[in-house]
Length: 261
Image (cartoon, rainbow, N blue to C red; front, top):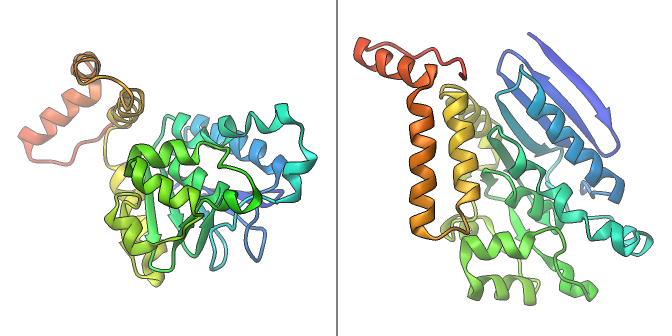
């Protein structure tokens, strides 16, 4: 098995080349708090895995029973206003990555832990999950894109309820509201994550990258603009090797062998 591990401050990077999977694993027990310096390092980790040819899918997960209780609180007072104004850029790294990104959440997923999960493409949640943006309790607001991303998913009424009351959202409600992609028993989270990785690896890397970027870029667009951009992306893929392979495999009733070109 081809497997490498790199340990950094508060997290590690694992690459399983056989599974074409790269994991960023939060590991600062017991609650996996995320330091100011770690945010920049996490961004670099996403960029590193996005550039790694061995990796097709990126997974963000954590050790222990809680994904993350959020940021290291004193760090906010120690950081300069200019530094904290850049926080959202680091936490948006999963959305900027060209490859699909899966967040596997269990237990407390608060503050920046929730915000970075919202920047991922898929959120697989254990039944133990509690999502929250508790910054109002500190006399602050979410500062890494959390309220903005959440509002796109659940609307202004529910977002005000979550943000302005520092309300905790449990797993079933998160799934019902469309925040979570999939809800599984706690013991099944790793298996569900591995199954989604295997599924995503089976698609054309080029078509996956194109779909992700198109959907992210058109989230704020008018319907007519979104349809126009979709058409341009469709026509670009029309001349790809992967599309030809997909059509030929379909007619030959065999599994396609996509190359990402």
